[in-house]
Length: 176
Length: 186
Image (cartoon, rainbow over all chains, first blue to last red; front, side):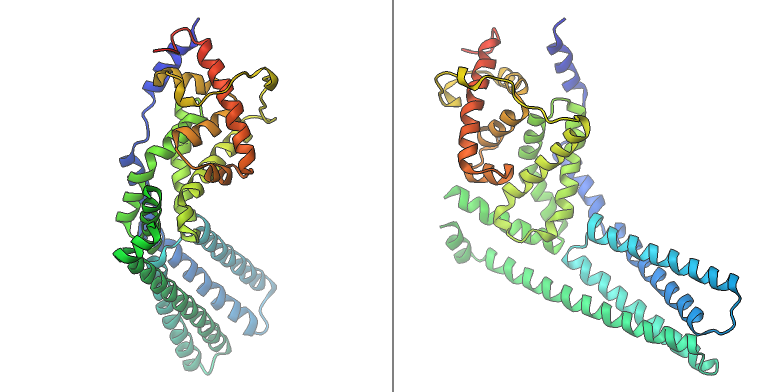
């Protein structure tokens, strides 16, 4: 039996991935809506870890079962943060403009978190947990701001490079 | 000259993609999908598997593009990703690497591939009968029309080794085509 006809018919029967199919695939993968849930989840998980960790650290006389529960919640929160970082750096990577949007969102979240924690801590007789959470929120804000500045710088560099490549003289120089 | 112009266009395309322009990704796919798909289909015999791998190649390109520093090396970079995807698949399928058992001393007078007058179907059958190492070097150099230095970069081997593999691959392909009754001389 000659295997070639079978192979040829198999080749015909399998739909080929064409340009449009790949474009659709990449559009789905590239959308900001495919990334933002991970950005939000990471911020929410980090906030939860800070709140729970601050209470755990500052409250005295907590029963053992409460401490175990706090430890478990911190571990789960840190796990989610690590997972989101992995997704955003390895699977659904952020392109220049998406980095700017994400870091702005992170800054806004951290600002709200820091102010809220500080207000709560201040209102309830200078609650140490609230003030500690506000301090950690401030550190997170600083980190988000550093990421924003880096994203802005990278974006500007790419825009400059793009302009230089679009200039006919530069293109001609490179082509020569 | 044309090659330099293409490289400049590729660089611009990469920068636009790195900025996050969706339209640039569409252009990138339009420009490169036929070549990459042809390369993967040339390496993988099973059509269903080849189509699956082509999608995987594009996903890896998407993930790696923000980190591509030298945009002028787009062609070898993308082909190397495609090759890695295929090799990962083969590693999973085969426990031991496949090697050619052809006697190289028996390969006779070599001539350029272009001198062999064959139809595309016969050529495809001939290529698919070659061992993977020979098939991929022929595909990259003749069908993908990459430069010798780019082929060397993709395969991570010296240019001299590319030349010797091409030499051997042409001989094997010639034999394979001659073995097909109506494959040669059309």
